[in-house]
Length: 111
Image (cartoon, rainbow, N blue to C red; front, side, top):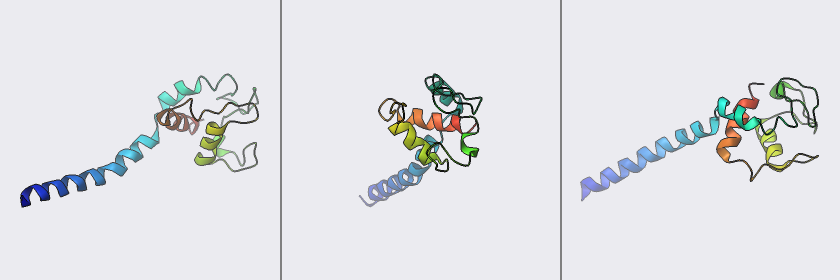
């Protein structure tokens, strides 16, 4: 009985130790997949220019001093904009999965 309890505690410890790493890896996103997700954004946003299309151009997005809302571009702020939409942009909160959003963020960081 004692051996099984130790094994169970060990297994739980391993799972807890691995869990955050798995979550962090999942949150990093895949640039190539993010480029695919961006195809639906490209109807309104340029990826290779900062010139306005229907929405603002996104080249150098995370290097900009401020966004159109006047705030400094942060991952949290950009993700909130993607989720909520506004000013003609649809809300993507329920249209994109968390993995797709992580992939999209990884791609946007490369622009």
